[in-house]
Image 1: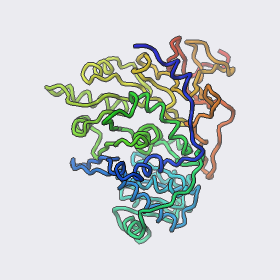
Image 2: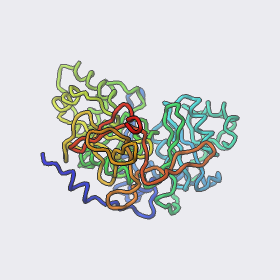
Image 3: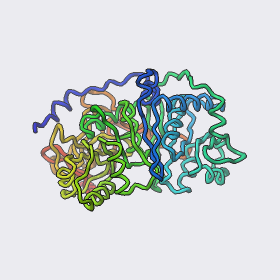
Length: 443
């Protein structure tokens, strides 16, 4: 293959509109056309293998009804609204509705501990929450710890202190006049699932910032018939901004399941829906490998791209198996907590060495600095950093607005370089390699 990286990287230019809303870009604009609106946006299988499909029109209608309800409840632009729903369709509709009214969506994962979710609600200073039976009852029990939380919309359970989801939607029309939304307006407050308790605030334009990395790692998504399955948490930066929302932005379906993410079930989903593109962690890929190796016949899959969203290990045998048995060479798609899909691989366009996290994707300027703030020579470890601007001098839309503080404000990054705290070095080819620790200052 020819190495096309230099030409792609040098020629890329950001074209970010002054106004953009993630909900409009990913859901509503497809529903505005009757033909496009009938396209499937989401395939969902429950724990028993029963599938339900949702069109863009259905998601848009549900989101608009909910948005009208939120306005009647007094939700204002800039308010933080918790979205804690295990049902994927309702989750996407709720997320879109919050963004429709100019508020900030705070997705909270079922993979968090209950105590962690309560802390996130409290620190977000959320006045409103949209929840289902997976998280609603615990939130009600702990409402005294969240004094700002005064309104809870609940789906799938009853309580005197909630507004029933179905009652709220039944009273609202499916038409909605969206507010003009600045591209740099806050859109998503994303908390990680660990106990580090750090939230990152992203703007609407962060979706645009994620697209180059998503397209590259997914082998120039979208192609005819493309669809995406991801095992990553839909409430995480990597799963939401790095996978689900870009796929919907391109008008292609996402496939998901409420069943445990086991190898056999994953294989059945991939086969049944003829999934073309995967976004997974290394553990999911290893479970899929074990399942397929236990079968007598060759896998009957339609995969054409696999993106690994994780710091890689030099698992050359797994990569060789993917190429040999699946006909696909996986690409790393590396995200920072403060910026999504900024570094990675794209074997279709340029070579990368197994074990590296690849190179900065077009539109992103990342490098390694030494303890004095100077670029480290090839092979010399330092700190991985990401610039505020790309090589053209345009602001990088993938970067966060800031790190959230428990007092309801955020800390904007200082200076042009975003310091990640990650040790890394760049080899002579230009690939970035993570190291376990940063070098000692002055060493």
